[in-house]
Image 1 (cartoon, helix red, strand yellow):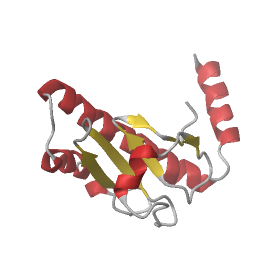
Image 2 (image 1 turned 90 degrees about the vertical axis):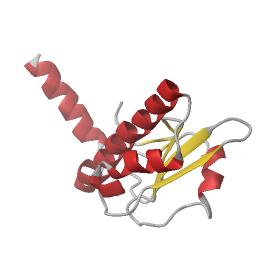
Image 3 (image 1 turned 120 degrees about the horizontal axis):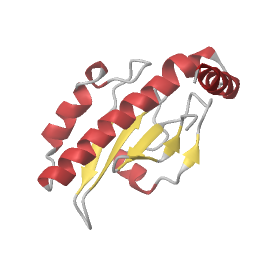
Length: 133
């Protein structure tokens, strides 16, 4: 078990381009994953979730901020079916799209090590992939 953990850790470190990714991008991704899954869980359990309740979940971790200190953005839409996005602007603090609504159609993409890229979850699932798994 110890050797397996060491091998996995070595592979993860080799895949990380720099220390900032380990200390900022990956923890932000993990925190957002937890928040997005909790919002989705509540929605599935209760049949819906209000924006106020979703924002309360977002604020539970880091007061709703990513590891760079930028506010996470939550947006939802009801038509044609309920959907939500959770967005971090990444290291540079600049959102790549002009409005949160434009993230609903964002394509899946690998952003590992590209620290300036937005981290996006849609309906509890990562759209931008910033983890080694």
